[in-house]
Image (cartoon, rainbow over all chains, first blue to last red; front, side, top):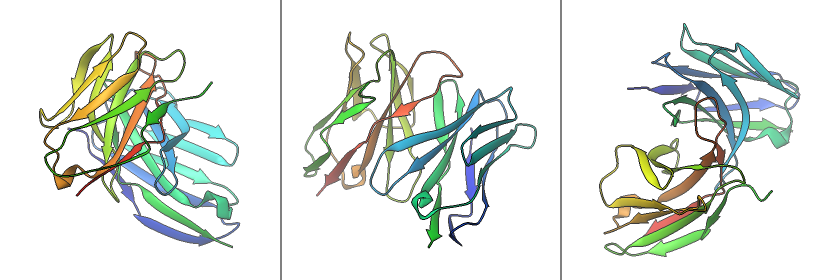
Length: 110
Length: 113
């Protein structure tokens, strides 16, 4: 049974810093890994999807990496802004269902 | 493209009642999945529908049931509501097959009193 863990549960950093969010998973037999952003009380916004054959994906200030052999993914956010404050969730896909971590609640302080 | 839409936005019910939540998938998507997200937790997979059939199911009791219509829209029904069913219910759509990105709707917030 796939288990996804995100550490830390919460992170607070000053504006402008580069930061890394971590995601680990127990079963490497995945099709892809997806990173989402969730604002309080809202739905999920897809940020990046990394297919199992890929090592990383980039979108603007975001870069996500995937290391299946070690069961790890990281989301790198460059030059953080207050608008980046949200909960970030990672999810693995196997057999077309997503298994989520509990998320990292990120606060960017002006 | 309106993306994934869900209705209603919020819902308040009492224990023992029944509820129906609705989802319209993104244009071009044929697969709909439902997730339950309790406060402070990651979403949990309930079930998935494709070609009007339940294709996969997570660890949820039979009180949770669903339906997919020919236009790919879907409903989630929950019977005999419990306090613990209070959560954000999220619908996701995708094209069938692996490597396809899932897109989520805004969710329905269900409160059971």
